[in-house]
Amino acid sequence: MNHKELVGAVAARLRMPTDYVSRLFDAATEEIAAQLCEGNSVGVQGFGTLEVRRKEERISVSPTTQVRTLVPPKLVVNFKQSNVLKDKLKGLPHE
Image (cartoon, rainbow, N blue to C red; front, top):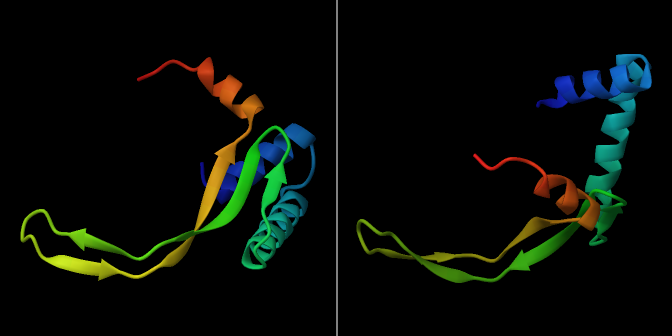
């Protein structure tokens, strides 16, 4: 599902104009990104928590050439699902 499809689905569920829902969704994602950039975690009840974590420097080895490369440290966004979401996913069939 892409941005347009998500906005359309939420707009239909709430019976609201898609342009309003799109602006609301954009504002929410911008605020989430701003909070993450400040080092804060963002929790959405019933969905999960987003937080920034630091991945340490490491050495990567190419399996074909055996060349070792130094991978610098970086920041990544980590998502931890809530128990509510976890329980909903348990009921889905496995492929």
